[in-house]
Image 1: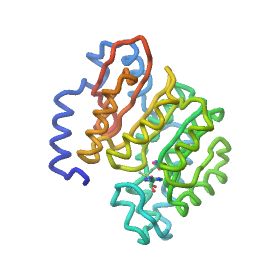
Image 2 (image 1 turned 180 degrees about the vertical axis):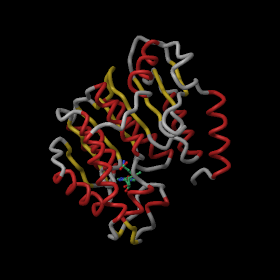
Image 3 (image 1 turned 90 degrees about the vertical axis):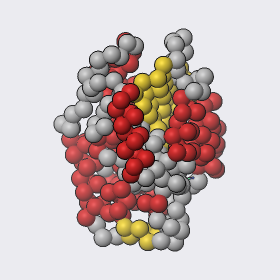
Image 4 (image 1 turned 180 degrees about the horizontal axis):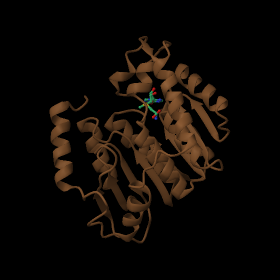
Length: 270
Ligand SMILES: C[S@@+](CC[C@H](N)C(=O)[O-])C[C@H]1O[C@@H](n2cnc3c(N)ncnc32)[C@H](O)[C@@H]1O
């Protein structure tokens, strides 16, 4: 079940007590310091692609269309099976906010991943931010709600994103199939099933395709006690050498030959 307002407030207070100050003060790892100052904390809205993606979000928020959902994952915003959900509500409550979209863009620009895997396309907003960073990246994005994926697929075409391969179906079926086709996962964005057990399962499925240079971003790590516990378990995995907690989402690195470290850093409204 989703952590309530008081639980989130306590979580935030704990985060603020333990996190580093904005600006990168006190980050002793040169690798994380440069990542923080040059990429995480170097937000800029000044980009024509961001404007186009945000225009798409605005269009969805204004449109009166609804879709019938199956409800996949542990997110009540998704509605109930057979429920009609307004696209405007999905665009408002389910898609990544602009500051997180821009962060995905900057991370993909910095690390230039050849293969990106996204779990949870929804209307495709986060997918577009990642795909826009580098036309040579290939973005595989899996979504179980076919009616939503059809909307995303249409917009990818309209906006000229030729480097996105949308995959319809449940992660349980489609992720193992995709993993057979690719040799590495250079960048992953896990934003699907908001359930700790499913998060761990999907992370473990992806682990054999992790390279030294891979970067994983997991959204909503404090969505529920189960998601928090899964995030902690993932951070303690021996393959994860650097984990960064940005309060809403977490970033993982798998570089070998360095001491394991965990950071709490401020980004965006947190
Ligand atoms: C939070 S939304 C993704 C938002 C998207 N990343 C964005 O920012 O625009 C999560 C999506 O994952 C899908 N999903 C959840 N569990 C799934 C599963 N087991 N298999 C396939 N899709 C799933 C839901 O249908 C939902 O559209």
